Image 1: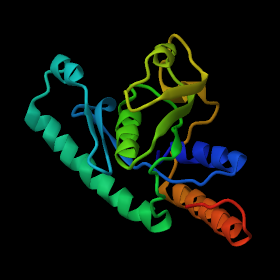
Image 2 (image 1 turned 180 degrees about the vertical axis):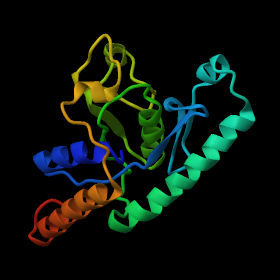
Image 3 (image 1 turned 90 degrees about the vertical axis):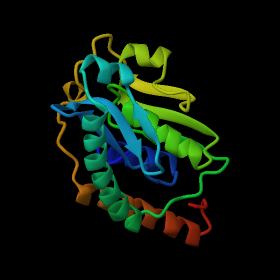
Length: 197
């Protein structure tokens, strides 16, 4: 998942010799607390909303719609940018490892998994370096078949807390990883290696 998940996914794809694709999603943050996820949207129209969080925060449908509209524009921008370097791979009947840099609320992972399932993925394994311990028992969405994490603390805090260095990942870094691995896949296919499509 761009942006933070792409460097992690690139390392996994290189290690496995697997093709790399992206699931473009955007968090829907609370209007006055943008870091607090109340939902997420995916590039195929996948939508996840935490109605309970919206109720507790007393958010109106109008305020949620405004945030969705803003995030929808950013989602469209990223889809246009990333898909130029990374056209979609066919997923029908394929197993997919969905990767992010960590799992907090699970909203973006749920939206991404629903989007991948709509594209025909047969099995979805969510792989993250860190997630809350309870998420291992109950993944954030039924579209996720399995969740794998290196660290699963009882008290999660924030994803960045578990990293020594947790910089923001830029669009240019995402594009560099996508282009590098797509070029590798093209060279491998030309040499008679695995089919990247």
